[in-house]
Image (tube, helix red, strand yellow):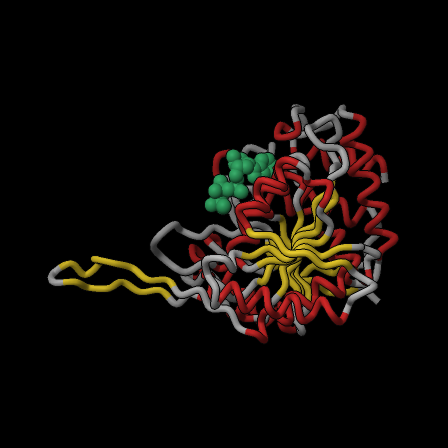
Amino acid sequence: MSTTVTLIPGDGIGPDITEATVRVLDAAGADLTWDRQLAGASAAARFNDPIPDATLDSIKKNRVALKGPLETPVGEGYRSVNVALRRSFDLYANVRPAHVILHGGRFEKVDIVLIRENLEGLYYGAEHYIRIADDPKAAAESVALITRYGSERAIRYAFEYAVTHGRRKVTLVHKANILKFSQGLFLEVGREIARDYAGRVQFEDRIVDAMAMQLVLKPEQFDVVVTTNLFGDILSDLISGLVGGLGLAPGANIGPNAAIFEAVHGTAPDIAGKGVANPGALILAACLMLDHLGDTQRAERIRHALHAVIDEGKFRTRDLGGSASTREFADAIIAKL
Ligand code: ATP
């Protein structure tokens, strides 16, 4: 029976890479029905609402969505649509696997899965200005909220991921030496959970600044990494840079009642509408979605085809050092399938 998936093409390069991804999935014979919905700037322009109810209802019903990047204005306007979607569907874990696909770079053996707590920390949204005398913006305060419940869910997800994917180690990244309460709680919860997995999954912790250095010096030493929201945002871009850039970095947002799959990168306004964006990250996100739906063989087949096209080097997009268009890259993958 066909599975219905909510499809949000998104903004900027979103429509181009979404179209390429849908063509690849169709060519691979994935039995999916697309329920197309709008969100982000395109929805704001059409319905005056960046997250229309129809889009929310569709995700609620289908429980699975594939989403292109969404535009969020910096500093003003509506709050991040991505953050709102994560909150609406309680998507507490963000999973970002990164391994070397483009060979011949600085590293050959990087294979890291970063799991980011997706709802709390500095993304919780408790922010305000403080008035002093006649300056209404004399100061600003943002609260980093960490709860035992939220930390437990994300960290336990990381350990369970390690067990089910045959991974050997979980590294918890924090700044508990300075933020003794909030980051200290995250670390404390991590140490407790690690005991449940003793003998099955190794556990270590790293302070985020040392982690940043270790990641660029010797990334091969890391396996599954779990961290709080903002550190996860920054480190996952760093990690995708180690393995060939944002064009090949997929992500999954996992919750108890829904999962949303997406590329790690944004709308790339500098190349939007030019037909040159790399659809690889969204295609790999769609493979994570197929895994999630239990269609792992097809996901593997698509990944193989994508890897083969990149290895051959004839049809690489510009970000990978080639000159192929979005469409040509997708066509080359389809030919391999
Ligand atoms: P946003 O505000 O939506 O996050 P951004 O430009 O700040 O947009 P990204 O969209 O992540 O951030 O892009 C960062 C850089 O990486 C840009 O130069 C962009 O062109 C490039 N880039 C991102 N995604 C891709 C892609 N799929 N293919 C090619 N280049 C990409």
